[in-house]
Length: 233
Length: 124
Image (tube, rainbow over all chains, first blue to last red; front, side, top):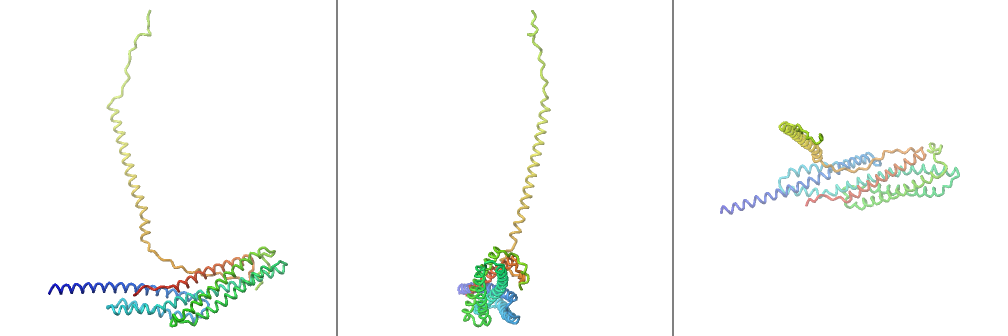
């Protein structure tokens, strides 16, 4: 009879130990995922500061939503560390899985906003280069040089800059009204914004080739460093 | 007839060095040589050991260094275009800045793709 009781006690101790190991493993994986998300979200808040095309109010709103996620994750981490029974621990860990889409949405949206913003800034740079090249071509033409080929490249450059500008504006308009609650339903909009940014970048690469080609063409002409250059604008 | 050339001359024996003196000198030279060899060996061993000790120090430092995963961030474009300067030099600089912007854009698009492919830790 005593031997039977001892066997039961031993079996119970083994089961308790196994449960403790499982809990520890689950707790450690949960901590890893929470830390990963908090690190990314913290980075996103910093990246939002650098976005030029968002208003201060838009930045503040987005940052406060992300900060709320960080706070929630930190609170969850504290709770998980304090959980004493497996059932509660599993429920808490499950909430990390359920909240994954919110994290994913912010990660995708902010990265797209940053890319859109940089595309927009790069378009500004290309527009200024375009104006300079146009000035130089006009000067060369006035000096009697044949600039027909340069004008073809310049027209292509302008078309690419315009298209990049349209693609970026549409992407920006698509991204701004989206929110985390709409994910994954709004995933197609995020994917479409990415496609538009990719198209805009492709346009700018062609515009860059045009600019380099015009620059080389101008070097072959008589006017290399015009005196009227500083009064172009 | 007197043949003086055939008269045998007395042979004077060559003076020989005293045997005992030569033996002592050699032993002394051998002892000095042994002492010198021992000193050289001890010095070499010491220097070898000392150099080894110095070489192992940097390795310990390397093992103690923690590995940090670098974070790749796009280089911010700080270049400002002077719109009034249409010289060759200015246009060269402007296009270089544009090229840098395009490189940064590639990096941004890479970040976008990574975010779409994000995978969470297995928590099942």
